[in-house]
Image (cartoon, rainbow, N blue to C red; front, side, top):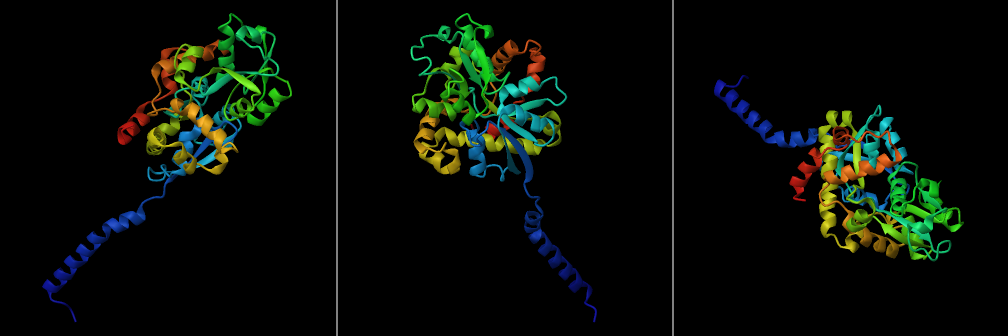
Length: 349
């Protein structure tokens, strides 16, 4: 039996209203899952202090609400992390800012999109056994100095320390010691008499009184003393095609890191310990807390790259590589403030 016209219109209206009421639910169900982003993390031990903001953002789940699901790919040093990005194995790299500068002019150049640390967090230290009476960089003459990689910022820092005493690379011998465990062993067996490296290896050796830190870029004042200006530390960097093809993912990454930076500004040490994995504590909670206290000032407040710092970094790297193009136009290609600035506004960082 057919319904009267007015009944059919009424049922049609009810059906339409029912569908309209269900639309929000349907939209939620149809929402795409967070986009997967592969991040190549340089530095050996996965949860180094220089990547603390990235660790916090991952552990406190700041990335998923922003729209990305971050997958970590761990590499022993920044150079290998950069290679992973350039070869397409990873989408983004967590590495020293200097890697973005050095990549300019290569087939695949990367650009920093958000800064994690505003200082390099590197230390120049001498063996207390080999150089117990160290007084100045002049005492490093004819010594063997360990660095993690050739052409990196630690290498540049060691050269800058020598320059403070009117010395150059011909006055010492540089030894490639690699990451944490190998660097620690190199100092202990006497393969090197000095190290230019970062935590956690330096924190362990300093606590056991096997070395003495003589120059320290974990602080703004210490960085100024060595480099004559500020120098950016670790950052997230990606190839320009990725930034252009995936602006939403890039913005989500910047938002997650800046959210973590904001959280770290007021977080108590105990809160940070609770927020990160147990294997991030250097195997010793007290050691981690001592090292954390010394890098708190180094953590970027807002993810932005200080322009003067970028210029200082280029000058230091040019000492190692005279072919490095240090023109302002090239330097400008090594970083973008667009994504970090939007995130800063979002979180009032």
